[in-house]
Image 1 (cartoon, rainbow, N blue to C red):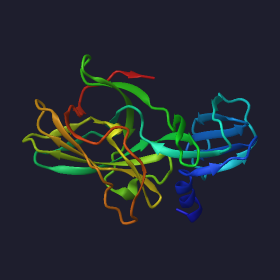
Image 2: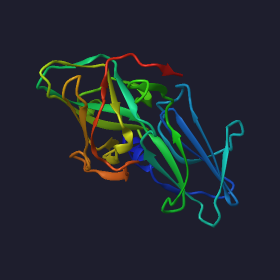
Image 3: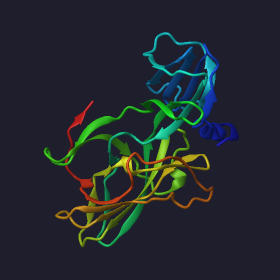
Image 4: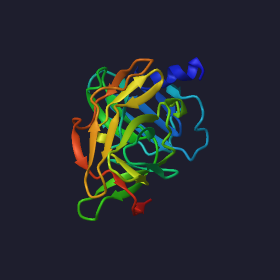
Length: 269
């Protein structure tokens, strides 16, 4: 990874002073964000492209022509501060992870997996980001239902390779790496077709040029028992060090929850 791209991955999550009447573009992966300041209003539009140009070097607050053919929103913010701040946040619902190949863990064994979750972007006004304007997803995920019809929950669905090393993870500003340690403390084999990650308990840290969350520890106690899930309160130990960029949407806690499922879910496009 060249220094130019690495630097822009970090700078993407920062603040920028806008000049009134001019339009600015942020781009990472397939996600595009335009922001314009006119008098006491912020104009914001976003778009997720169909895959064309998704590998381009990220754009960080680059001045561009105002694109008329977008769905713009308007936010009225009084005062002379023209600063806009971008911060990563986790998706606003749990994410059901589907490994591309089913994973099997024999009894009394464990394994660490690195799950890649698309980030959301929180757009705020003011130098300290005190006024939240909106949030935008950087990728379009399908909806799925996890659990039984009565006590289940609406989630996002995401297919993943569930890689085993950090080196296999992408290095992009719109991708968040979630370390998941799965421990099978039952006597029989655990077959993993789907894993429900409750993202509201995850913080986001910057390590080097990558975004990473606190570790999720999942302890399987057998199909008839609820699974113990623990969300770490600190960042994983990383050679490049870590810097916190976002707190969890909800306070971290340990819980007993249904986390694994081998049932086919109903998916909504």
